[in-house]
Image 1 (tube, rainbow, N blue to C red):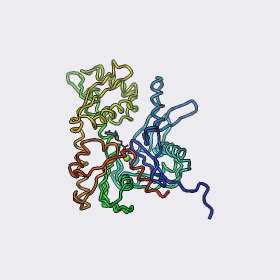
Image 2: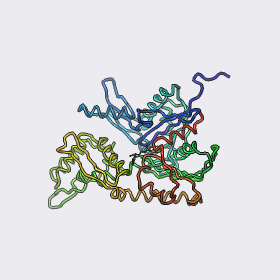
Image 3: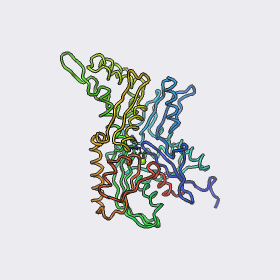
Image 4: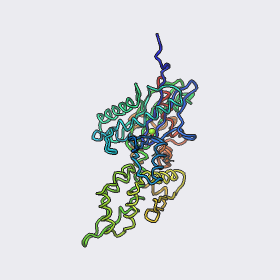
Length: 427
Ligand SMILES: Nc1ncnc2c1ncn2[C@@H]1O[C@H](COP(=O)(O)OP(=O)(O)OP(=O)(O)O)[C@@H](O)[C@H]1O
Ligand SMILES: [Mg+2]
């Protein structure tokens, strides 16, 4: 029988994450990950659309961020930077978005990121790539029903097809992380996996054999993770410095200076660019006149006017990441004109933990429910493997350390899912 032109069939594992994506292939000795820079094997799941003389140009990952920041530095009106696209997949009412007067479907936007990943992998592996094993969360953000889940998968598959893939197999992300862990195992273990990313928190409980055998005992998922923690920092630390608690004079009453929905949009930084409308700028100009703390409204106006959502979010993440190492961390952020927009404050780990306490409680409850549903007592679990960027948060680790002392393993926070997907792929 004749072999197809591009034999052998190369299958890869692709972790299209809410925040970061990575791609890996199986090799005779193990797994090879695509490099995106000298020190990174994952790429931000971010898309930048800009209007050039010859039409609209898209870029993704590190190139998107570079182009966006370069436009800012040159004082050009930057294009649209879009992130966390995965979180919209199950939302049936969200078909896409308008950019430069053109409607882009969600599948189209995601496919541009996926196509760039595919091309980069082809270049590094020196092989055409048309097949992939793709990760999926146990529960997509915003999915209320099984129908929403199915809708999310249909759209994700369509995005892969648009990006030039011919066939796609889905695998649960925490199971993929388990397969990556299993690669180094020389005996059987019952293992609990916790994968805490940007959008979702996923759990799997399974027994792994030394020869690759697997028995899944249960899975569970929550539709929030690191993005929700960032939103808490914006709500409690940043928004008040921009007037969310400020009042304005109105006849002989005092009322909130700025409507709350404007601050809600700050919590998802990529919505900030939607606030640059005449309506919002008029609301803010009037609030500025009446506010008892006009300097805070002026800072908010500068943030929106200079379209600094991405930069603000980076500053939030720097503080959050530092709190995973330290008990307190500074928050520093200034606009082009530091006289108007200059936020300098600090945050303690204890404050941050108080703000995320409801999410931590839900994580603990979901974990306990999974253990109860699979009739596994903590003593029967040999090992707990935590992965994903949000697993660096000490209070989250503590939930597991308390229940499973001495059984914790962590590692490959940004690549274990892609590695496991590559191992699960047929290539
Ligand atoms: N040191 C750190 N401390 C706290 N949070 C961190 C740290 N490093 C990264 N994060 C957070 O981890 C998240 C990204 O993790 P990861 O790359 O695993 O997510 P993802 O795979 O893109 O998302 P998902 O799996 O939910 O689709 C972000 O919210 C990021 O802010
Ligand atoms: Mg992930």
